[in-house]
Length: 131
Image (cartoon, rainbow, N blue to C red; front, side, top):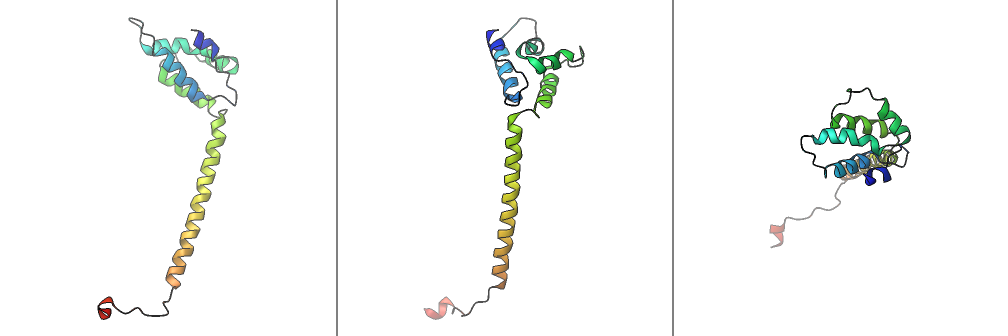
């Protein structure tokens, strides 16, 4: 239980919702309670790993509306992905890839034009004639 309280998620911009969900899952997967599904344990334990706005959000969820770990995980990540610092990085990567694609396309077109416009100035004789 100490791990849950020491590593809580507030929903700040520098926090990663995916990492938090993975850490919670890895810790809870160590628990084996006879007659209790892992889903039930995850649903009960997850709120203890939250603080601040993230805790208020999970407390406001309608009881029974989110009844599986998968639904809670997806809703949590979707809510917190926009505040995830990785979002800015992903946008930058997509932008760079887009620019790279444009650069490669224009470079390819230029080389293709050079090849099409190439006119050899001298004819190379066939190899057989040289033998």
